[in-house]
Image (tube, rainbow, N blue to C red; front, side):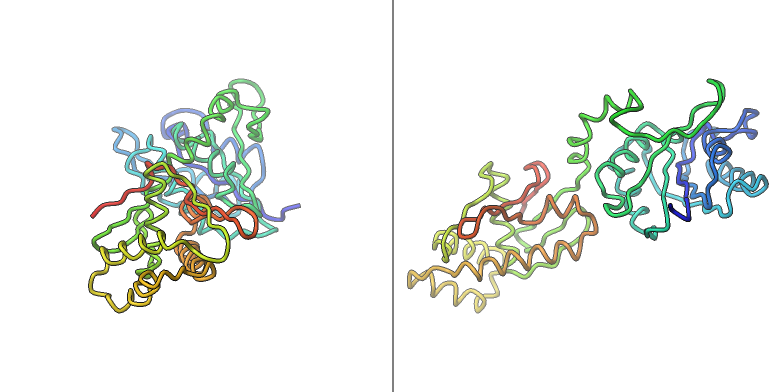
Amino acid sequence: MKSKKILISFIGTNDQGKLNGKNDGAILTALTNQKFNEVILLWNQSGKTGTDYYTITNYLKSEIIKRKLAEKVNPYELIIKDVTDHNQIYWVLKEFADKLTKDQNTQYIASISSGTPAMQVCWILLAESGDFSEQYPLHLIKIKDPKFGNSENIEVKLDITLPKILRLKSELNSLKKDLLPKAILNIKRGTLFIGEIPVDLSPIEFCHYRYFAERIINGQGDEKFSGIYIPIKFMEIIYSFHEESFPDLELNRLSLHKMIKDGLEMGIQTFRGNISKINTKIKETIDNHTMIDNFQISIAGKRGAKFYGIKAEPSKIKIFN
């Protein structure tokens, strides 16, 4: 049994309550239905005339404290320019969720009844994908409106509830891919950005990553490497990439050039070492397992014959000079 329950919810127009001369909205109703130790109120200022979410936030905080509906109330502003844009909402929400302390004694429960439909979908995506936490999952609830009978907090499970959300279930995987940022490779500068985050690759690591990125763009998919050596053809491509992106680093190419000239193949261990370094840097830079899974160089197959490639869709990789 979790000793601490924390409710998280976006603030919606329905939460104005008495400010708008109406009954309690979803958040106050949820807290009346069920005991929570803490409430986190997510709000952002809207350009919509007549809706002041800062004022609604203060109203809710005051009511929660006055009615003793929770021991602690934490308002948290999220900067979202377009509350109908899944891409904006998801990554801002994910960044917020990453800052939360997660342990075996704390249960986070998100109410999806307040906010825009896009916000609702992003809650579901965050919970279903495991991006919130694979070890300590996020629980979702919807609030039954009192006007339809006795109100209650209903657990959301995609397999058994919310017909509207069930229709979205088939779209979640594709939507999740759509939400991914792009991996951007600048050949002239020899840089890799995943979204707005730079990944600090060495020149040789950048050239290796470019090789697999170009295969995705060209529809070639994964590449199989067998045995204990890497083909000279691969070495020649890496050499040409290095020469193109890092023309002033001639000394770094001397050993590779000599091997190619002498017809000597690169050992598989050297290749694997470069791939391992690339993946380690991506994991250390990107704090999102979905992004890591899509943009690292994946390795599959049996010993002695492995396939290497990037899982991201071609539309998610951009290479320019």
